[in-house]
Image 1 (spheres, rainbow, N blue to C red):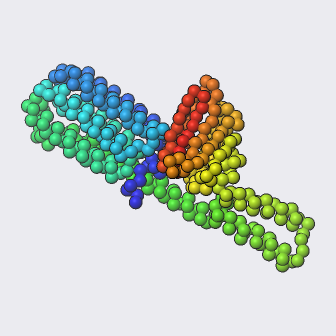
Image 2 (image 1 turned 180 degrees about the vertical axis):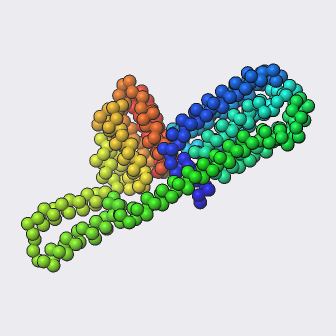
Image 3 (image 1 turned 90 degrees about the vertical axis):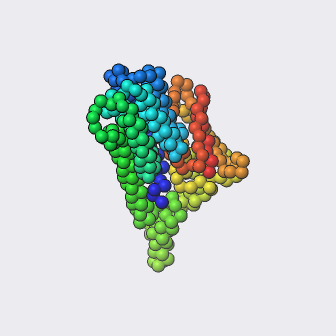
Length: 362
């Protein structure tokens, strides 16, 4: 069902771009907290709690940046909960630091900073989660607003409902906007995938069995029928027959699902024939990564190795390559690792001073 999917699951590379937004938004959120704390310092009754509130917000933003990394992707439901709870704790500590001296609720940074964090989650989690987070957080913040409103220190003579609306609106609005953004991304990605699948069904794919049948029925069989019908071979028919035979052999090799690995890596081991169990997405991911490893200046030439086998009863593999000195390939490999963590049930990247390895399970 669509509601169980997230934008990051459908578009792992999009999560990398969105992470830049997370970093910038996180810096802004912490900056707002520091700026409003300084400008409203006369309302702070407990400085150490005010400092703790900013520290909690900074830690929450730091965790968000970590959880959105392509090397730990995808951002899981538990991480989403931690991020929301961390932001709520920062809001509560901000209000507590001003207890007994808070005169203006509209200049409290908690709801504003949390709204910035919440809206940055739109590229990572499902719409219903984002909406649930914003509604639940708004209810808690509304309760905090009621308590603050009854403290007797606020100087603005307005009904308590106004205080609630003032504190709740930023988080609720950003949550709704984030959920709407997530839903739009998901619908567009699913629509694009459906369109691509339809196009492939119409045109055929020469690397799939149905594509092989299309090649036979559309090219080989008509050629043979013509030869049988006419009873003679033309001047160019011999060359044409050799070409068709060569193309057919290539397709038969592709059907083996393993031989393409022998051709693209420098050393290949697969005694248990695990390559047969790779699906189309997993083969595509490995092919793209291997091609990059072979063309990048960060890695030693002819050092790409792939070992497939059985590990603790499960098909698994290790793709490794030697790294050249004075190169740090983490940034350039991030997109490939993000996709690998999506198409394999388990995928981990390991960097050493002399090489890179991707370990994965099927």
